[in-house]
Length: 262
Image (cartoon, rainbow, N blue to C red):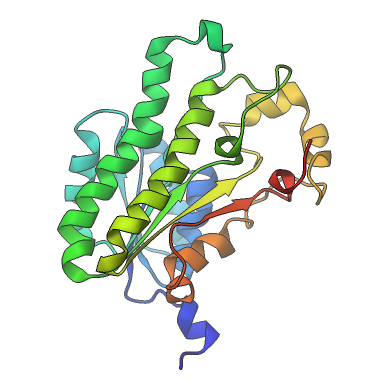
């Protein structure tokens, strides 16, 4: 029998976190690093990665940063190769990189639709496929955590967000999670998703300004938005042996928004 501390311990494990330079990605990277995992973080902008590495070092966490635009077709394979070269293998893959686009459905540009879909779902498939085939399946061990959204659990009203591509992509992430969990469970790989609600971030800044941060907080049963700690427990559960019997699941971390009818 293992103690709770041992079940959540990630000492000796390796992790790749996409979109790990700020916001939710950096929060999750810090959580994994604090538990002992060796990290690679990626995002598009090198300056933001440099700031993230400095932040992690302040917390005693050593990490490697790799700049990568995962919306480009060859980028996931290149990121996987660089990560495997540095880490040797990848135990934990956090698919967090994502983008959104706001426009009425009738006017939504096709180019923007493709941009959102390419990053939010195609790159997750590509990166998971490579890491799974080259590292997790041969070792019969892996933890994949896909970052979805409560936007993937339903649509938007006419007066709310106009993000049809984003909502569609995040719904795809949720069923991708279920399907991959079903196929790869035989290899000792768990695949789960986290569906965050509203967290203050660069991505949500404009929307929260438009809709009102306090108004959005009041829509949640807990009457608050997410903060810099609220994803740490969930990502540790899915990434560690504490969650070894959980797969194919989506956990909403949203203050209860998705539990009630609005």
